[in-house]
Length: 258
Image (cartoon, rainbow, N blue to C red; front, side, top):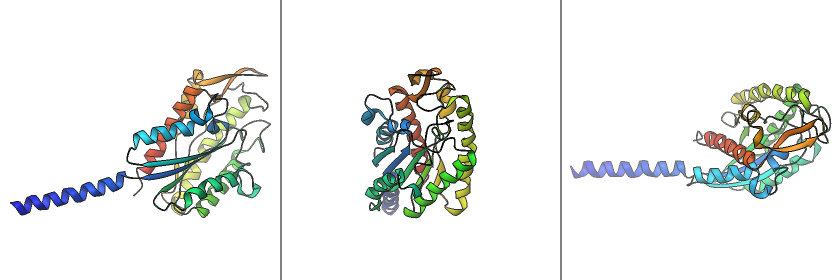
């Protein structure tokens, strides 16, 4: 009888140890995006930008995990700005990721949301970006990340909604909003294309930002432009909610990793 108890106890300890190891994760996250990721328009972006709120939520939701992050959201940026060949914003992503690269015990995650400025009629660099060129640009960025950081995880979130009268120093309007939505199936197809070449490395993240924020204009800073008051950048509450949505997607992805 004692042997059975001892055996059961050893098995319990072994399983507990395995469970503890599975739960004890270390995540290093590099957020890539535009002004929405950066926290544009917020009074205190260093404490209220979506990546900050994502980080805070992940620390609470994954208490056994060590989570670090770098916010590489740059206002006005497009996929063109992040192309490796331009030697511009992608260099900052490399610098941020290289800080984490030597940490062999951690999972390096790139959380990317680009497309809002690509969709504009005019203004941002390279806009308007066609769905075909958007696919080429995103794929080019991902190929370089996968090459430079073998084993990394890339999560592509869908861009959020903006009002059809959006016009600041750039013009977005209804034409831009329609173009933005044309990027969604492109992002899904990109993820699907990597399943065979880079299995379990490229994932679809949060996809509900368009419909959700379209229903909640109160979650935006009310900005004034040539076409009236428009909604483009989330306010403090909106940024917090967006960050949590991203965080939940990140947690869902990393929880599947073995």
